[in-house]
Length: 527
Image (cartoon, rainbow, N blue to C red; front, top):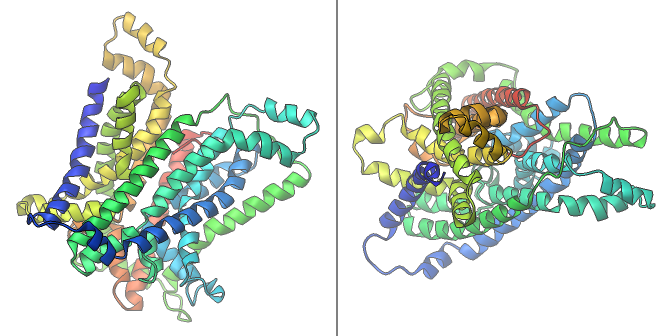
C-alpha cells in the first residue's frame, strides 16, 4: 500500500516544495551571504511572531468558549432542526476568508449594527471573525467524540452523589481532553496562518507573519525579508502540525452513538439559550452582507445595483463569468483532490511506523503553511515559464487542489480505519482482485465520507483566496479574488458589487454544505 501513497506525496512535495525552493532561490540566488538575523530584525519579526501567536491563542480560547456548549447540545440532546443547526455551524468554516473579513468589517464598522461598541478598529474584530470562522472545527471534532462517550462512567459518578458540574469536571472533560486539544491545535493553526481576515480587519494596524510576508513582498518588493519571515512561519506551522498529529492519534470514539434525549425542565432553558445565542452569532454576519448588498450606501436608498453590476466587467471579467470559472475550476480541483486524497488516505490508513508519521506530516503541511508564500512561489515560477503555461486555466485548479487534498485525506483516513481487513481477505480468497475488493468492501463503507470529502474540497477550492490571488489572470479570476479587487477600488458601486458577490458565494456555500449534511446524516463527524 506504500506505493499508493507515492503519487499524492509526490504531488504535494512537488507542488508545495517547488514554489518554496523557487522563492528562496529568487531571494538568495546571487550567492551572497545572507544575514537572516538582520533580515528578521528589520522586519520586526519578534513582534510579528508574538502578535501572531497571541492572537491565534486568544482566538482559539474564544472559539472553545463559544463552541463547546454547542457541541454539548448536539451530542447530548434531541432537538428540532439539528440538521439545519449543523449546516449553519459549518458554513462559516468553508466561506472564503475574504467574505468573512468583509462581513465583520461591515458588522463592526462605524456605520454597522455594532459600530456603537467601537471594536471594528481593535484586535477584537480579528478575534471575533476567527471565532466565527473556526467554530465548526470545535463543534464537529469535539461533538463527534462527545456523542460516543460511554455514559456509564457519568452515571456511576451520579449514583455516588456527584453533581452535574462535578461529573463534567472530573469525568466528561478528562475523556474529552484529547479531542479538545486536537480541535484547539487545528484552530490555532488556521488563526496563525489567517490572511484574508487579518488583511481586511487589521487595516495595516495589526499584522501577523502571514500579512507581513505579503506586505514585504508585494508592498516593498523585499523578497529576502518575505522569505525569512516565511521560514519562521514554517517552523511554527511544523510544530503545530506535529502536535495536532500526535493529539489526533489519541482521539478515538469509544462506542456507538449515545442516546440523545429531549431537554427537560431547566435544561430546556439552557439549551434554548445556547441555540438562540449561537444563531445570533452565526447569522448576524451573513445577514449584514445581504443588507449591505441592497443598501451599499449608509442612509442611501434600497437598490439592487450591486446585483445588476454582476454582468458588468471588473478587471476585465464580469462577476458572472468569474463565478462560472470558479465553479469549473473548483470541480477540477475537487476531482484532482479526490483522486490524490483517496490514494493518500488508502496508504496512510494501512501504514504504520515512520511512513505513517512522515506521510501524515507531509500531507497536512499545505493545510497550514502560508498560502501567501505558496502563491508568491508560483508567481516566481510562472514568470519564467512559457506564456502558454503561465496563462493556462489549469494553474488555478492545480493550486486549489494542493490546498484541498489534505482536507480530503483528513476526512477519509478515519473512515477507512472502520473497514475490517477480514472482509477484504474474505473477498480476496474468493478470487476478487484488489480493485474489485475495494469496490465491493471499502467503497460501501466510506461512500458517505467520500461524498463529504468531495463537498468540502469543492467549497475550500471555490473559496481559496491567498494563493489564488497570485496566480489568477484576468480570464481566470475567481470570485474571492474579484471581491478583493472590487473592495480595493473606491466608490459605492464597487462596494455594492463586492457585497453582491459575497452573497453569491454565501448562497453557493450554503447549498453545498446542506447537501453534504443530507448525504452524510452523521453525528457531527470530524472534518
